[in-house]
Image 1 (tube, rainbow, N blue to C red):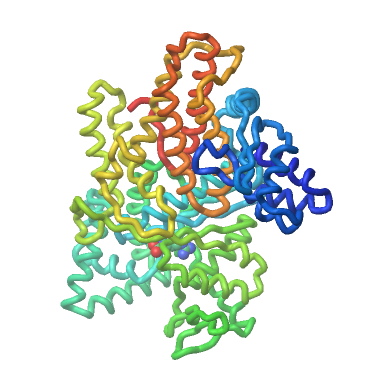
Image 2: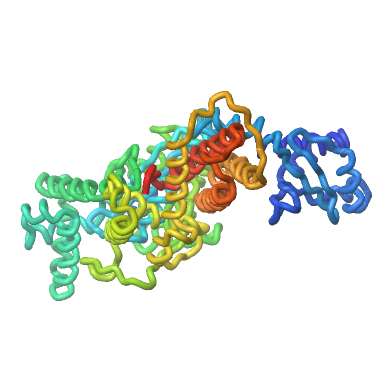
Length: 567
Ligand code: ARG
């Protein structure tokens, strides 16, 4: 579609006048719209904006242009009430678009826009020893999807899990372990046993506040490098990462780095000194802060009264380290919107420190998740663990598979891909900033606009292709409107990828997937594919199915969904 849009923009800009070529060209490119209904064309351009330049009414402009313009790939142009409606020719779809997709296969839609540029993505980043709960679903899947999108657009990407692996919670955990812990039990119970210890600490500390002093002491010892505490701390982290990795594997996520907050322990003081040297540090009630009142923000806290560092201090040190290590062109931080102020504050501090790359730091905030309907029991009380949410979806899908496809091979693998995929798809269907209320039933429906429906459509393309004959060398001809409609959806993939990447919005891909599924299912129900009688009609339909398979498979992959070939 981008080539077509460019053709339209070029012809129009030339026709309207050479002096304003550049501005008209970009203007047309950004103003072309997709009409809500195909009787109004495949692309439409409002002519109101040219009225001033051409000193004519939009209606007249549209009519004149419609009769003058000849554009490659466009077979008909209609002027309707000041709009130009463009109709894409079947010839373009058959001779240019389809061959392009079949040649590029699952790389169709990729680009080299990011060539030579590095993007660091900081996402997921759970806090060790605290539950990995559904609040982390957003950062995990949005973050990973943005990484996949950027990679697909040619950027060199570095995915970092900025683990919350430092802080007073470790003093609490060490204290609790020393008092009530048992090595074997924790080896066996994993992260649940750690969280249980942490919860017990809080219960006991309610009754005996001296435990808090004890915890502070243990954390202080850890900060000083005490051998025993350091060994415990490392062990707690290993246990936690092993558990996170199970969830990441279900989502197909791997990180390039697990450098968490602790890694920056010795990298903060030099930055604090730089802040001080710039004259930015103020002492406020004993704490060291950077006053941001000129920027309408509360002060950014750099050091506590006791001289210990804080969350923003670690983020500043981490950003400096990442610039030196990766020489990034951009860093993307994905967290809940609750942390927006934190990021705005320390981004400002980095700017005031004089780092010119402060402008390359981007915070991508997302809304909250709540769960209605079915209550999911967890062992940790009021929070719902991501793992449990996935497990319950997988169980439900497994039941459906047992009932509907009892002979399926790899039932477990498929149930996992579909169960987890259902949750991710449901979640990424919304604009990320929107708060969502999660409904398991809606997410798992095979009929609605869901992950299972999309994966099922993908599996349908696979099974059609598995039965299809070889189509090499056959002529392509488009005979049914559903074929053309399907290809027109596929034509939009490259620009959808770019838009989702530029706006940090995976939901554009999710919604686009639904358009592919609607288009494909219409095509499938009205056009016999493998059983079409005419040889070239059959070959063309097989090729359309193949093209859909590439694009749908890739699009699902870009939002962290797996693509079983059979369901
Ligand atoms: N560990 C933090 C949390 O769970 C998120 C860390 C986000 N990344 C960062 N560089 N601050 O809230």
